[in-house]
Amino acid sequence: MIRFLLRILSFIMLVLAIVAGTTDAIESVASSDVVTTGFGSLWADIGPKSLAVVKQAITAHIGSDALQLADKGILQQPAFAVFLSMALLLWIAGYKRRSPAGRFAA
Image (cartoon, rainbow, N blue to C red; front, side, top):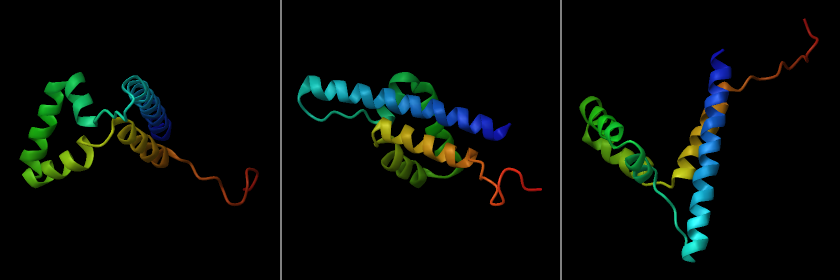
């Protein structure tokens, strides 16, 4: 059941990555320049309160150095890249290895 949930979440992240990448591509063609939307700015546009809560939780539980690392490492990256990497990590976590002996082995 958990693997199924991880695969569904991976699919949702993949769809979000495609939507974010398509939006960036359309904006880039329209402006004749490379335009990428940062994950932090996208999150701030969609849910500014949740972003503030997460930043406060990181500062309270881990420290301000971790907040600076998260800000530079994740929030300033392009949104499509963050969603794509989360989709990959969730897919890896939900992946079921095939039996080396085959389907019909005892």
